[in-house]
Length: 304
Image (cartoon, rainbow, N blue to C red):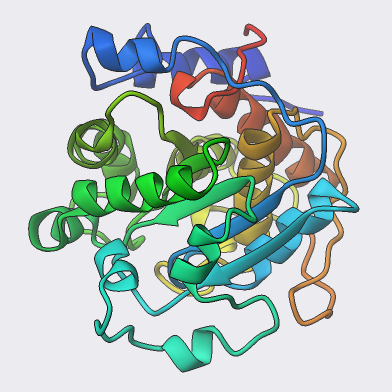
């Protein structure tokens, strides 16, 4: 198979993007929180997803299939919903009835207070700049994390790094490169930290690395370019949901996703469009390279 970049070369590009330490933002104290990888779970997880349509129904369903028997999940979603709106009683959540009309819905405060979960995945609204400026993202990241830890001191809390529209005037890839340090770490994650880490699911970074590789090659398998992953300017289609589900799997389970199934079902039980073998292989390689070379995922690096 023709390969423009080897996995090792992709890894070097990722390290260069994040900086030598794998972190673009933070002090020595912050880096110390992420110095030791978390132990990979030895049993299936129960996960609660908090967010909006960039979580959706299909991605968590795909994650459950990748993880295998025993993995369970629930969620509370909205349309472009902030963490603040999910937290504050009486705040209207647009699209609430539509997005939560399924068997996996559970009220968020009830879920987090229940101590039923091994992992809590927090998702902030798009546009991240507006979420920070108007909706106090760092404060509400901290509040959700503290609620989870109060109920279950062993719960692992994750911040799901998303993305912005493909037609962003500042450039889609340029913003993925910049926003991880400037916004996701610098103005959401780091200010929310105290004495224990909140780990990152770097979906935006994975999307960026995969798109760069695909477009440098002029297409890979049944993925022609970035638009092959999206149903519109921002929402994922089945191929994009598969890539982001792989990213969640690699972070939450601390395992290399290479060799996992590529043919999955949507949440409604219908067959999802699958990446072909070449595209799936590249997705899995890039996911593991990004996840295992970025310390804030909590996944042990296996070298490049």
